[in-house]
Length: 295
Ligand code: DLZ
Image (tube, rainbow, N blue to C red):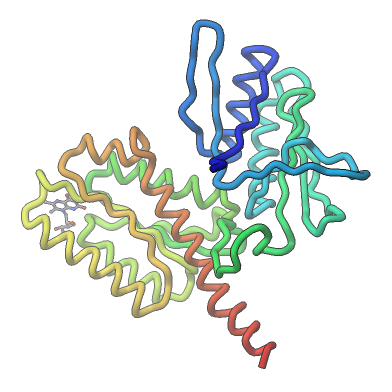
């Protein structure tokens, strides 16, 4: 059974290797588990889908490696910003404008190091290559977000907030479209989230806090109320609320989930908020339009 495809490309120098690593990490690829020996090291990057495609006939200059993305504009902005920051590196760093292709898609190319060109593309057909499903894109352009973040254990919640802002801004949200509300502790999160949701000024809300079992009397009771309140606000207002309230035994565990060993749950919650705002738009607006059109 075929399991996957790995495309191996050797960097010509250690510097080129690091430049490629930096570019692919910036673009948002999930890093894989690399390996190293006495004379080599590898930096794998993972993608959820891959295919090998042979072409016969004439095809206008298409890069050998094509990376399909959602939210092409956001990816393009990231690539351009990366190229600006890394302009000191030799040659390369060329990022072209987005152009239409003759295969019903839009594409830009990036050449982080000379001679290695990658094409980033998005199909006009959102269901390209996928089973037909209503799915949210990870583009936050033209969306408004509320972030409710507690101050209790700010050493953790500030990192969650940074992670959430990073995800929203890198996905195309405008700074002015993000409202950050700070509350004293997790207990206060549901009430503030509810007020934000009822204000109708946001498309989705990210809730961020941390409850430490060791430090919190009636931990279970507080946790139950906080999660119930956030869920209830989501269900009764119809505004997606992403849940980024950590529940940990210790501060160390919380730190691991706020940017250390286990990623940043604020970043993940913000991505969920973007996706659910897009899903809502598709279900409420697009699906209704489709159904009306077919009547
Ligand atoms: C009081 C308290 C305690 C003991 N522990 C936590 C905690 O671990 N995480 C958290 O976010 N908040 C805690 N709080 C504060 C309450 O959430 C709340 O802010 C206060 O009880 C005031 O209503």
